Amino acid sequence: MKLTGITRVVYAASLDDSSATLGRPKERIAVLRTEAGQAIGKASIRAGQLLRAEAVAVLAEAKAMGRK
Image (cartoon, rainbow, N blue to C red; front, side, top):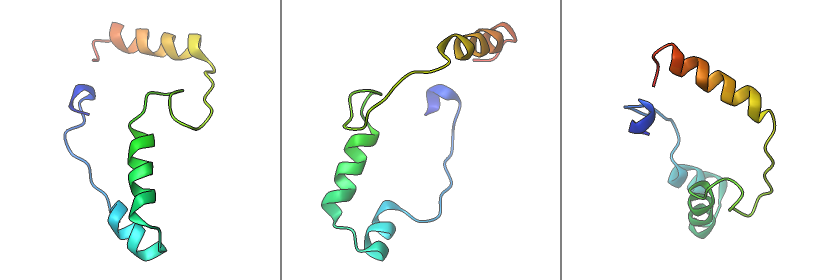
């Protein structure tokens, strides 16, 4: 996340808190962590790309304005 300029994350309930409160087995939390770390389209959920040209245009505009 440092690559994007994010230097701090603030949150309320952790995954362990959620697991304990909602009665989810820790194994399911491990699966969630694994899924979240996968590249888009590589995890078990279907993925499709929309509005690519528009998104690339926004990125190019931000770069032109000197943002990283």
